[in-house]
Amino acid sequence: MVSAGVNFGTESIRGTGIDLGEELQQLKRQRNAVILAHNYQVPELQDVADFVGDSLGLSYQAAKTDADVILFCGVHFMAETAKIINPAKRVILPDLDAGCSLSESCPSEKLAQFLKEHADKNYYVIAYINCSAGVKAQSDVICTSGNADKIVHAAPGDRNILFVPDQNLGAWVMERTGRKMDLWQGTCYVHVEFTARSIAKIREEYPDAPVVAHPECTYAVRMLADEVCSTEKMVTFCKESPAQEIIVVTEAGLLHRLHKEIPDKTFIPGPTDNCFCGECRFMKMNTLEKAYDALLNMEPEITLPEPVRKRAEAPILRMLELSK
Ligand code: 13P
Ligand code: SF4
Image 1 (spheres, rainbow, N blue to C red):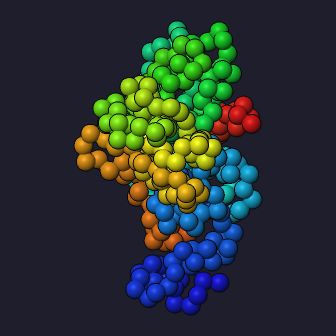
Image 2 (cartoon, rainbow, N blue to C red; image 1 turned 180 degrees about the vertical axis):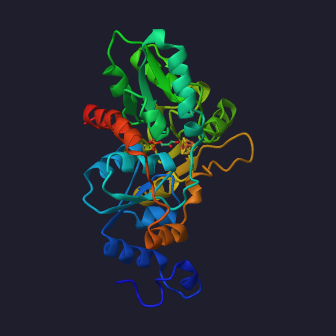
Image 3 (cartoon, rainbow, N blue to C red; image 1 turned 90 degrees about the vertical axis):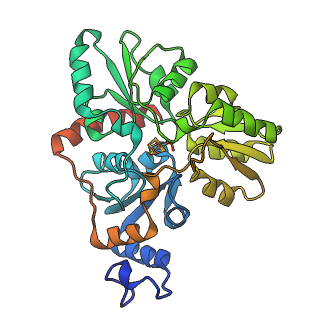
């Protein structure tokens, strides 16, 4: 049971000395909910989550949970993915406006129009998971930064591939697999802020520190990195690297997990050329207060028209099967 006097939303909790994280845990048990959080979420949300990980890990967790409710602390496309593969569960997102610049770059109507205009290409569409359900519904298979090369390797050899929506991740996978693909011209507004100049400069300051970068970074930045990988693989890289100092070129939220799990090493956040903080404004829309209120009120809830959900489910399940 939620303690007396605190089940009226966070207004009744602020200033009372009540531990909101603990209240959220109680509410979670009451609702038979699971809390999933992405590596970029604010520390308070990572600390209350049952699982913290990258998009791929979160998809597997969403696929296997037997909870009735998923409180998804991430951005909209992540919670939507959880709903697509869990139609009978209630999926709650603390802030419904938590979007993604990559997802925005590829509206489903624009993709439909493009596919219509290029019907002669008979595209096999590979969609990076950072896209809407409407885009997933038009795709053959989904991928994440954690499994993109596996998914591209498995694509039929006799088909033209259209990769949407991230041009940088797409170019990186082309380099790794040798497979030619047509790339949608989307970008992550956070990762393109890192430049060759800013990374070269920090390398000079820390000559012994390896650079690990996310594949959403530009080619020029990826060229300067010792390792390019998903956020989950970054955690593994940092654990396994003999280096004491590591330069981490991705959204700043990952630093919390790195400090927590690898307290004896120093992590240097990848700098930019300007005063950009390296934080994704969408990821940071979720707060502990909003998460508590969302689970208390069971909204905002992710809902989808069933025909779209059904069509979007198949390429996600294909991905989960292929990347086992
Ligand atoms: P990961 O799947 O590597 O965690 O990346 C998700 C994302 O949104 C990167 O900006
Ligand atoms: Fe989207 Fe970039 Fe934010 Fe990831 S960091 S959610 S790709 S805008």
